[in-house]
Image (cartoon, rainbow, N blue to C red; front, side):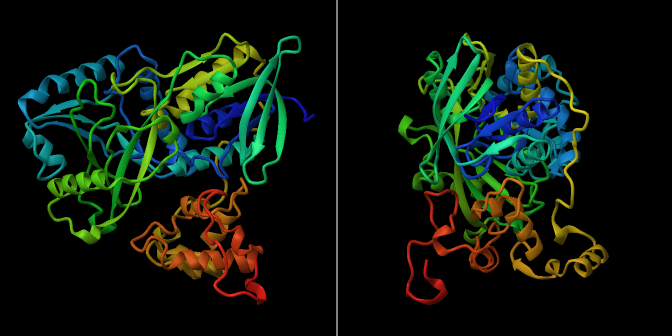
Length: 501
């Protein structure tokens, strides 16, 4: 059998990766098991990318405490990991007098939770922040912001990997049991690419399985928590509208709404999102990320209402994300996060980590580290590299003189692969050669931002495939979009020669 780990984390979403990075500060042998071929391919990359302030959650709950704490940690984390973040603030707007009690409740919660800098604003004051905004009263929270959700997840994982954490992608946990005499867990996993099996042993087992966290808990004999998947759908708008929104604008949510309402959200990359919707879906569809025609029509109609200058060509793509809720459809609303050592010694579970899970992730990592510290000695490593090395950013955003100097040193910076986003061959190659070793098209997309422009990969995707084929030895059947269940090619138009797979 393999060497015994001190800690195994199941699930490499933003929370699992934040925990991995935090534990990498200590002399622990830590591993991560993830069923997908890359980190953050579930809920963690399929959301609005909003850094929440803490006004939405009941005082005294873990959600409220960890949201405010995580928000305060983001600026330092962003600087260390070179992840773009913008503190653009948020207006929660009462459109009618009926919305005002709910808005005042959010203000009261924000005060109790310690949210900094809040103000209640009339329409004139709101228009100084966002010209043309409607509404009779607004709650301004300047600590709210936007971040790249997949960028943060990838950065946390790659930094954890650089500090010694062992990531085993493509490994789906199929069983786990504890030997009480030896105080050891044996965890079984299946390689989702090859079908092979493996086992690992660990002293501490952390369940950060997101949408599937209740399944692992049931495997361990704990069945007091059920996850319901709630789908949120989005439209992505073209960058032509960049700058239209100066801040986040949210409606006042109802007391039992499963989400925070459909709204417009600017992104750090210049696009605007319309959404999300909120609809519970059947249990068997937890990973069904399809977009539905009637919801897309609702989003389109809402977008035109909020931004009348929209044209059909501004809607460049859609996507959806599924939230792991602990409240059933007939209840709605939110339950508190579950973060605890269970009745099984050494088994830590995290369930129901939906919004504000992204904002809370570094704070959740500290919460889990403290639990681990009660189970094992935490001795700090002599050397922990908290800063992400190398150039991580957009080449096209650099000053012209700096770009010219970089091209002299590395000519591949001078070759454009993605015209819409101005992504160079060197950026594509860096994405392909990522520290985690994942080479799906989605892995390249999330690291380099290729295939995210108006043409959605029509120009650059064939060129990326060609680089994989000619410079990395990929066969056509090796090229996958998101996972090993999503091949780019199913066969050859013609046979013979080097194109034979």
